Image (cartoon, rainbow, N blue to C red; front, top):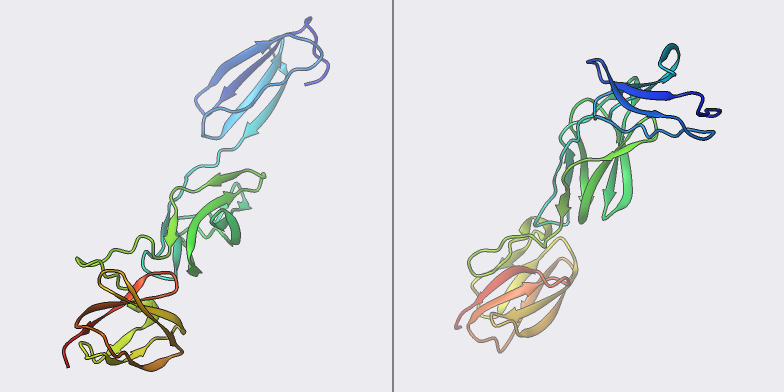
Length: 238
């Protein structure tokens, strides 16, 4: 407010629906600054000059209620879905946008629908959602969704199943060192023994017949290029 002086007192109060509550009375200098941050409900503020109700102005500060929760993801995969538990179709007559972030970087947005929102088939990463309102304000939604393999749980022997991603087929299994290996994801795969010692790199383009002479009977693991165990092979005596 510009033009105030100590001949006048300016009194601030707020009303959230249950009557006026005093905030402060100010008499100082040539300008007055009042920070309007109060309860999370929609709040009306007013300023009276010398207590005169005929010389006042009113400011209404709208709330941005409800922090929805982000969930979903995939602990054992290379893609997954991210879900926001709810959304506003609009707030005070204006659309609400929900921005999806991957590892803190903007990915895409969806308009609020009044119900849950889902982003399908997102790649590996950690996802969060932030709501953007008509007045330029924004609000982080609760929670996050992780997509990747770092939280994949193994069986009792430490073997990690990621068959849904790779569509692995190893047969016959058990075998005597000769077997077929199929996968829908071509690449360089590595064979390790059960003590973690590297035995051989295998280039797979789809379906390959693998001939491994000199393998001792025992349990072997095939790892992808990220070091994840994706299949296990039992070698037996010929």
